[in-house]
Length: 287
Image 1 (cartoon, helix red, strand yellow):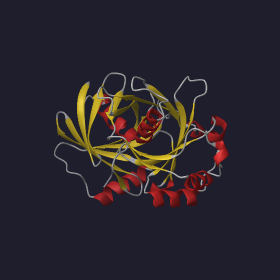
Image 2 (cartoon, one colour; image 1 turned 90 degrees about the horizontal axis):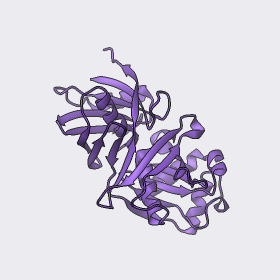
Image 3 (cartoon, rainbow, N blue to C red; image 1 turned 60 degrees about the vertical axis):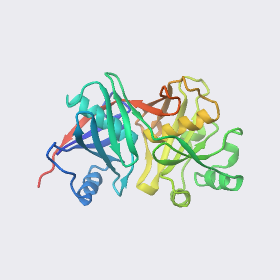
Image 4 (cartoon, rainbow, N blue to C red; image 1 turned 120 degrees about the vertical axis):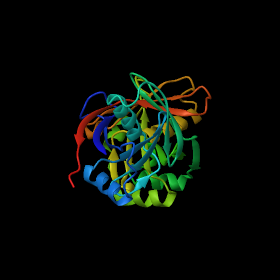
């Protein structure tokens, strides 16, 4: 196996969101889960992807946080196919990523990797009492939310609470109550929370912060699946249209600004997340 660290949703090393990428040889089987968890924990990135070639157009990918296996990870998937392209193991074209969230189409071009999200769905809309509880978990109150938008649980592969924030100053400076966020995540069976504010200058679509302490990630600087969910949320409010290419900026408060793109496919239902990744390190296990 070959082990790499990639910086996703960036064209520069030491920017964007880091992910581990473990490429298995064609004759290698997946190692046992304990070893995969140990590798993910040792790399200390929010997710590490283990990829195995099935055939010339299909790759199986399993994703591990430092504590558990998860169904899907957008930035790790972007990292996988960017690394395969950079290592000349694939060329431009269409591929299938076989994941626990289903088979997803991946488009590899010279500039970006585009990946399908799972079918988007709004899983839950919160009532007023629950909304107050949600904002309280981030030491905010309901007055710091836009009056015309409310939190919802949205899934495009993973379930997140999408939380609108009134302005960027509030977004940049909130401090979560970690125990409350973990409690909410368990209560509503979500990975975490994706907080956003719309760009008043409309140079980008939105600025975001992603919080997921339940799975060992206090904050993540780029999340493909969460911004896929945000895309569906914004479309549901008619803030964006099916024809738009959307730009989300995430990770600024962590000093690792990331740019995540999204768009709808021709079927007008499937959301794609786009971005690039660069290899920053190659690693080796000594036994």
